[in-house]
Image (cartoon, rainbow, N blue to C red; front, side, top):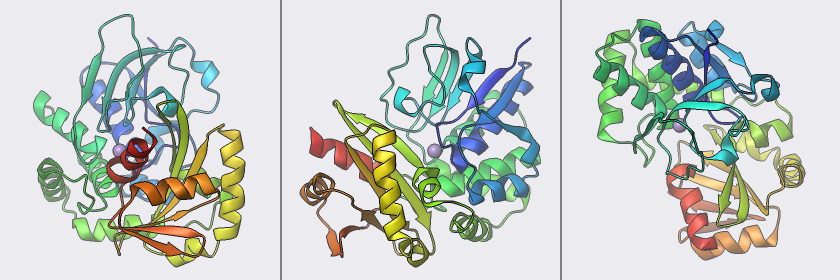
Length: 313
Ligand SMILES: [Mn+2]
């Protein structure tokens, strides 16, 4: 029997990686054959999370998507074709869990498991599924889920955070004997280490394409506790953004440097259209050289992407 491939969005982030592995484990607990995969470079935070849970061996990299034509897939942490690591027409989608807005343009021939909830992370949803199904969460899986939840909610400070995220962080930190703030410090410190990546890799580490009513927009974010370190690379990052804009064939491209500690995001700008759109749609803006700082903004999902989308409509 060929294994169901459980995979997050293109440029898999920590939540995608942790939710894919734990969802694959849950499928296995239910007697199915499953394999967790990821697409794109692992960031240092994800590496730390895997080490923390001793789960480095539990995920494989999907390199040539074409090899997986006709295989069964279970998507986690995304529901739009523009973010899919495989051509969704060529694979058989058997399940999907997510916590993003419903923008799904996937079609299936048979009924599938499909569940989206407005939670702070996909990892929270997997924890909830274990609970609902009455399956005990193994210690290492609990650690992974905890890392995914803390990463995606910026340790429960992001405006995407819900009471359920708070509840599950509390439960799983008790089970695993973890102090959430200490794990958060380690994760964010690791995420802020960009030394292993080229400017282009940094732009693409946490990058997503959106289709906003026919307008293609690429938005990358760098969540960091050391924004000044990222700013040192401003010139190189902007050159890389212009390349990415061409490669990804998008109309607009943004890179947001998310200052986790001071709750603001500096948007690097490479064009007039990018700039005027932000000026039009965001209210609390500070001009910073050629860039714009959005105060009180840290979430692409809940703040940056929907505001840009509204502005384009
Ligand atoms: Mn997520």
